[in-house]
Image (cartoon, rainbow, N blue to C red; front, side, top):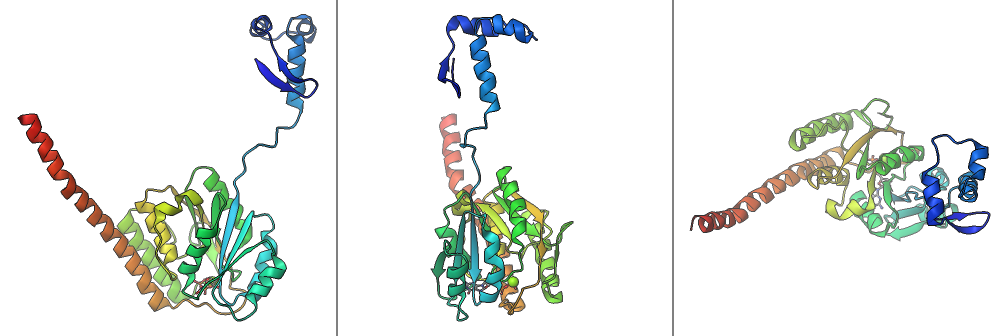
Length: 304
Ligand SMILES: Nc1nc2c(ncn2[C@@H]2O[C@H](COP(=O)(O)OP(=O)(O)O)[C@@H](O)[C@H]2O)c(=O)[nH]1
Ligand SMILES: [Mg+2]
């Protein structure tokens, strides 16, 4: 047996000492222990326990990906609150309001990606590709998502979930940002998603999501627009990832206006919901067609 002791470097217990060690009575008195062979080793063991654990304890590292288009004012509020995350990635859609200057001034360590304004989905995918930490957290730049909630998301990932989605409609959640029409549309899409994918979600079109970086490839993301949130959630189901929902409170956008168009983007969400389900059916059908001849041949061989 061999272990480390702060008093005398590596300690070794001889075979004989080990035998005595195992032969110790259930609750020996301290005096009895000091008389026994191996007592020095025992003292060393106690000394070791009093020392702090070595600094190799594993910790989940966090990348925050922020899509931003003309969000300079809002980023002034958001960025200073991200001091404890390991990596900040801002994907800028050719902002004209000095977003880049604000990022460089308030968070010099941030990775800044410039991109044509192709939409939130394209921005997030570019950010995901640049992320290097264990967990990726998606955060809007408009100040509607409270960075204090990041811990709740990451805690569930650390407990084994691959993807954790925020919900404004579960107990403890809420929204100051949802308009009547968006609330209605979201409710319909949640019901449709639950029926098509046999899930029990309470929210769908909400972008406060954390995911394990190693799960990214299995998500096969293609969306460019606001339908990315729906695509992430339903692809997670078809990829059989472990998904959890946590309550989240959506704040009002701090300044500026939303670039989401309920009709245009609602139509895109609907297409993602249906297309993914149909593709899944087609894949199952193709699998059955491809495996039937093999099964037939095996049966014939067994008969012959
Ligand atoms: N880089 C980039 N970010 C975008 C684009 N469109 C929207 N965003 C960002 O995506 C986030 C959500 O957009 P927002 O308009 O607030 O949509 P809502 O929260 O659904 O109302 C914000 O941080 C936007 O700045 C884009 O084309 N490019
Ligand atoms: Mg917003």
